[in-house]
Image (cartoon, rainbow, N blue to C red; front, top):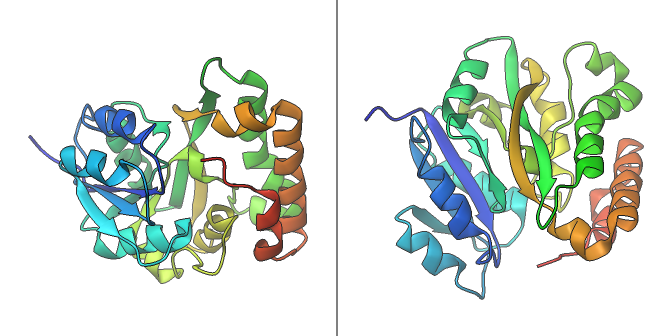
Length: 244
């Protein structure tokens, strides 16, 4: 069976409730990814055991933090294309083919999928807002880059890019505890358009379920606007609590 050139990098921290489902989903990919790398930041549950039983490559990061863990995964990855996937996100069976077809266009530097947030029920309102902020975030705050193809993507959209472009722009900023995904979009935009694929990935609604629709979306908007105006990510992190 022909493998794709996509390396899937999954940062984890206490993800036993979701990781096995995500890895089973990835096992159905056609074509299969070149490799799957689970990069753990110090889980105290069964996350590592689940990953090892699934037969994927497991990396242990000496420091927790999505940016740091994803950079470590990208450093070890062998594929020409990188996909950064949250442990609670389900992708379509042909997502590797979609990524390869998208990045075959030299004018596109990176991309992501439409995120459908769901759990016990589908969060249509939150999902619609997530879709719209891909566009209005860059249009409102970086209009000159919007015209050049900037779209603001987030981690639950299964972001992807070429490995070469990722390292040329410096990868994820390890000093950012939050908004590292939007920051990467700004940096990748120097190399081409950021493209939203017209396909859906399914992400867990666990944060909205815990905080409530109104509070969760108020936090998203507050953090997003402050970040756009240059407020330091280390300050913003206090408003984005760990829900695991």
